Length: 294
Image (tube, rainbow, N blue to C red; front, side, top):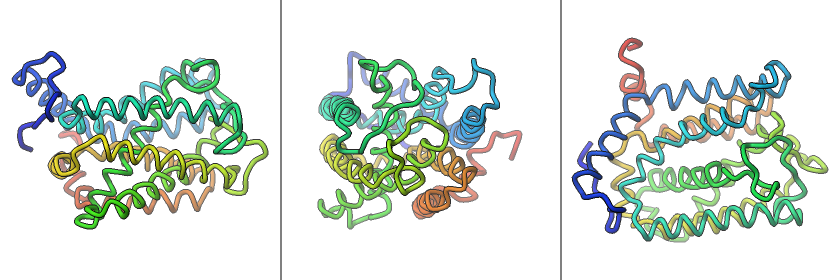
């Protein structure tokens, strides 16, 4: 892979040589641990979360928020490291606005039951903001939007040049991600809807809410980056979508274990989309597996 090409305004107090060296080191760490991050972590996560839901773990380990946050951070690392060279001050501002929006719409949803429907968190996913929503909520939500957007750019190719097509497809991908996430999260007791809805306990209103929140989120991500520079980075950074791989394995696996077959099929559709990028085949296994396992 070529040398990182930071966007204008990405210095953040570091000279270009130092920034490039740090970026290269981070990429090397991610590249050397791809299989562990993209496959081992979600597999362990799925087993641990299901064991927590089924009362098979001791209290100190069941739904342990530190373990949940640590595992999430590790699985997000390929996306974060992959995007770093394209995050300048403008992108930070847009992502900051998206962070504020993420908190705001979740708090509105908790307090008013709009736009997702009546729901409540049934466990604490780490520290809770105002005692109502997880402080780490942007860590859970924003990468999902970024993954959907990046996959859209790769799969659409030249059709992504059309703004309406690009944004509509990315929003549909975000909603599809939640078709996988929400049934599994309900199954393992992360949150619950009152009353339960027809889609594995999830109400239809939830997906109307995701269309609304996803549209705003995708628009802000689209605004945040220079699309040509971002697409160049996505094409040359082979691990940038590994976070989506771990998402599919973790939440798709949980859906399979609970017999949520429609949700599992949607996860399978993402596998097809990832395969269409040409980077997740036998070559991925050869490059991602530890040297001792090849």
